[in-house]
Length: 119
Image (cartoon, rainbow, N blue to C red; front, side, top):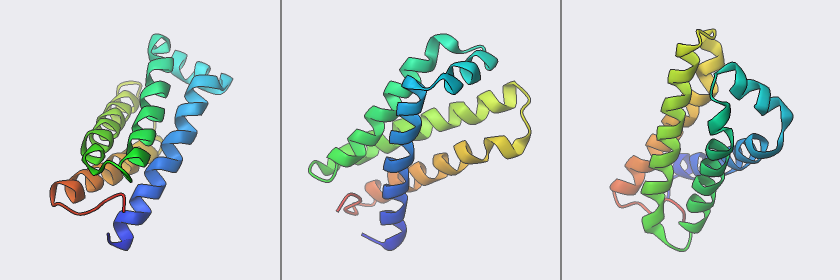
C-alpha cells in the first residue's frame, strides 16, 4: 500500500468516526441539520458515517469491504457538497466534504486496482 493510500485511509476512518459520533450526540449538529432542513436525517447520517468508518477498519481483515465502505462515504460527501450548494453556503464551507469525497473516491480506485488498501 502506498503512503498516499495509508494517509487517505487513516484520515477517512478518523474523520468519519469523529463526524459520525458528533452527528449522533452533539447539539451543534442538531442546529446544523435544522439549518439544512434535514433534521430527520441527522441520526441516519451519523450512523452511516460511523458504519462507513468501521467498514474501512474491518477491511483490514476483510479487504472486499473497502469499496462499499469508501463508496458509501463518498456518496454521503457528494450529498453533503450538494446540500451546501442548495443552502447557498459560501464555497469554502463545502471544502471539507469535497476533500473527504475525493479521499474516499481515491480509496475506491485503489481498491478496484487490486491494491491492499487496508494493509
